[in-house]
Length: 433
View (cartoon, rainbow, N blue to C red):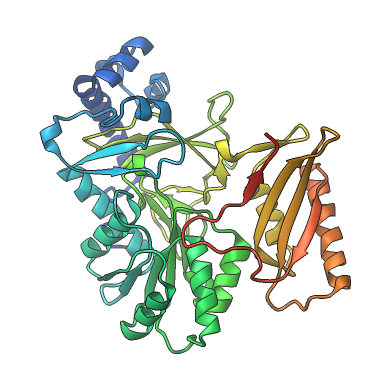
């Protein structure tokens, strides 16, 4: 299937050749352009001329968040500052913000990648794209905006929040595509349902960024908004790797196609840093192939996913990884068991009577032991009753005990009780320390 802005390579061998050429360029560019990279490569005993095959990737040192923070304000810069035309920064929840510089080519490449995302989602130039993510130093709004304009559709840059205006624009402007976090998508879907807008608006696709969306959340968004479940898409991306738009799950939803003509993706065991087997969950490690201002060499993203080795029915040469399953630093230890929120998310998503929203509360009592309370919402169409709540409570507690091997106390609450967010929803509340 031919799509606008798709990769120019026509075979896997061409893709591998392009990756090798890009890897050689990146190592040479970083070595001679960045004192920090030159120091890391010298310490690893690797020179640019040593890169002769893609297997040599494993000889290269890792880059981490610490490298970006220590190099503040312009970390790992590999071009003269006068070539930088823009900066973006991460949200900076811990420590200093990770500031990333962009050359004109970086911005153009990013726009092309993002335009490809719209194409893989089946968008057309007749679409009207309502962008409900943050603008400013964050990459989100600018990424969706530049990609939309490059693709050729109409961009409606609303930004996050302001639900009244969002709904008004859906009606007045006939928006057909909504771009937002999954949490914002749930908020909008609930408002569309509450205001009786289904059938009155033209919304037909929703593209989620910045946050993992569970199957339960996606089902609820589809049900309340009237947008077909098959027309809900996940778009990955991080500030360090251009921003959102570095991949998308196509209309077959077999996995997220990632743009392997722009970066190499490794999935490694976060403890041993050895490659995971296809289908095994590990940490995403990325190496850019064309990025000028701040190239990345084996950057540890901390995002968890798995490679999907099967071919997609869409016919794309672009390989696939699973949706982001969580972050290696999101893991919490409860009574000696390593737990990711996605573990609990997956269990809840398979219980029809449970809604999409939940909270994990961890606390320590005077006896010195750790305890977990899991607050879950009843599904919207489930009538509250003591009998149903007790049945749900026992079912969830039993499944968590059997699958995660820990005990927890489940509290079932009314639909809509837990807070909604316009950005990312906080799931874990740990007061043990």
